[in-house]
Length: 147
Image (cartoon, rainbow, N blue to C red; front, side, top):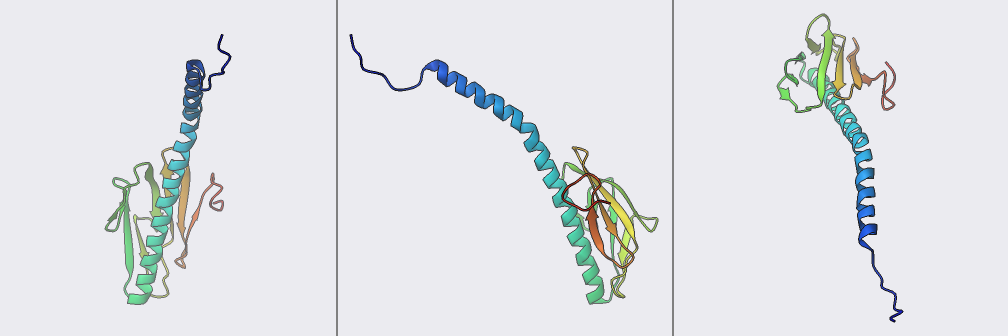
């Protein structure tokens, strides 16, 4: 009889390991999807805020009023069409219209609010004050201040 031990894995051990990896990756997939959707919502809100702040600075520097028009039909504002497929522009109101104006005099603005909604249901609001200050808030996010 040969007493040498053989090293290696049996077929049952290998199949069990593959099954466990499959189960754990299946459990982790929904949380990754949520993380990606929240990152896209955050990215779209921060891109929009950066563009609004740039429009305000352009108004002050050039001495010419700057405006941005919004539409829920397409995810577009001004001449910028951004592809955030999981984010929708759900509601906006700037002085009763769909256009925000940053005035050349001191960067004042038509105040208003804009809501962005992610496909997972998360929502952030972009608020513009009469003084032209643009900020992001959210009722259900730990990233931004509460609205």
